[in-house]
Length: 80
Image (cartoon, rainbow, N blue to C red; front, top):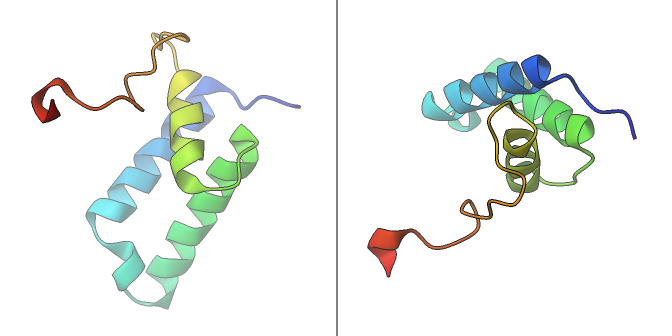
């Protein structure tokens, strides 16, 4: 499988986070389409089938990510 460059993944994550912060999924057709496109691209770039898995995979490929760190899937310390 081809791997997306970390800079591309970082940009896609930033776009996704900005669109979700702006609630693009509840916006007009062009905003919803842009969110869907970024989500799809993240999934393709990471070889996953859903956006949650794509975000986890993309973040683990960024510089500074700890490959054995599963803290994204673990409950937070404050939730314990």
